[in-house]
Image (cartoon, rainbow, N blue to C red; front, side, top):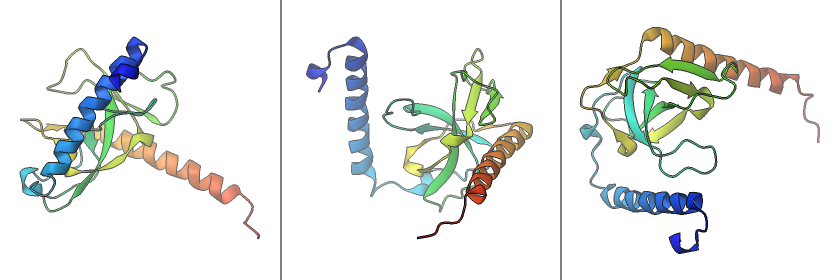
Length: 167
């Protein structure tokens, strides 16, 4: 795979893919032994790290912080999260973007953003718990909720505005 890559960018992506495949295989091997009890109860607003794996194109990938959007007790297999990025959006005025700002306990120089279209329901095996859980400010959680509700309303309106289907 790496031998077939021609440009430095392709070589880097091929290397990242082989690293991810190795991690993914390890997750599969450990899947039966994984206990959800090793992951604490996750509360709305907790900041966790997740391993999103290998990305294609503009998808988010790799290990990154994410905001827990819904409480997830130990016995739940999955958790609903919103991954965040330190890359500032090109058109940050779009209603899908929420400015998170600096996250306590992380790189103090980096500002963070979230795109509400990146909400993901991930298996707890992908969760990397920080030693001291970080909690997002409630006002930011409210902005995230408003952006999500706005996107649902926009999509619902588009669906409702279409003429009914007739065969």
